[in-house]
Amino acid sequence: SSYIACFTASAAAGDRSAPSKVLKVLDEMREEGLEPNEYSYCSAVDACAAAAPTLGAASALKLGKLVIAAMRRDAVPGLQVAYNSLIKGCCAAVNSDETAMSEAFAVLDEMDRNGIAPNVVTYTSMVNMLAQAGDQASVQKALKLLDRMEKEGIQANTITYNVVLKACAKAARGGDAQRTLRNPGPRGAREEKKMSLDYSKETKEAKTDMALKMLDLAESLLATMEAKGLRPDVYSYNTLLNICASVAASTRQVPREGMRVLELMKGIGATPSAQELGCLLEAAQAAEAAGEADAMRVGIQLQHLLLNAKRPPASRSHPATPAAAPDVEDGDDGAWGAAREERGKPGLENVVGE
Image (cartoon, rainbow, N blue to C red):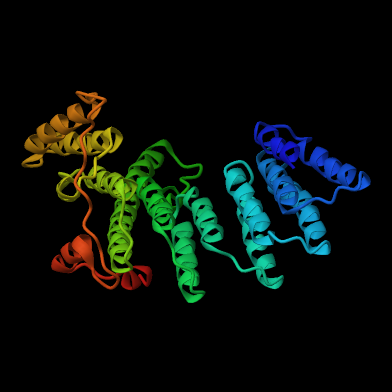
């Protein structure tokens, strides 16, 4: 079984023959009178799934499903884990194989047909795959999966919400903006120049609209987490900062929402990353160039925070202990929900319905 597990690493490293070698090892085990157990089978499925980026999702999953068929035949437990491995394989292949996403949804449907209940790992892997697409349609699909989890009584955790936030951040940075562009076609030079200007304006408006929508959705997600008793972590807030920077950059305005998030993070002891501070600083500098009042002062504040973020700790033996985040009771809106309510922001259900 441990030997089979080694093939996962080789498959992930690009060994296209790893899945077929794993199937051969399983056959050899049976010939020697050794019945593969749950660990053996699940490791074999892992190896097949890990080859998805090199073999293609369909081919890798076909081999993995042969192993799952053997598990069902021999009544070996662990089918949920095995199917989750197939979905993770699709997630790894989504950037290189355009069929990977549809293959993953097909696996989810197969689990349903075979009576294998998905769990939080299943859905989090699905949402993580959608997050890599970075468009509004994928964000909406991720939200539908959250709804499906709730209907099935599966509690989404902080990691699940964080990958949805990651999808929002990627959409806010570009999203569907490029899809709104019109193709100028073969026109005269003067007309092409005019179309090019319209092009730029349309792109900017689409990106700004997308960034604002994703910011509103991200804030709703944080409020929902707190209402459900989940505590947003450093990743949650840093992802929100990234979205705030995208909004400020697209509107060429001072990143005031980002500064407010920084104040909230300071209050709960969450440390902003140098990368997100840098994004906010770039937005503030763009706002200053556009003549926005107060942009210089905000930029100086962000420069100071960025320098502190890059500075190594004074003592490794006595690291600073951040203040504990406030506990959130189930049903309580928490600090973020209260702030959102005060600003008159809609709830998650209203944002999803837009």
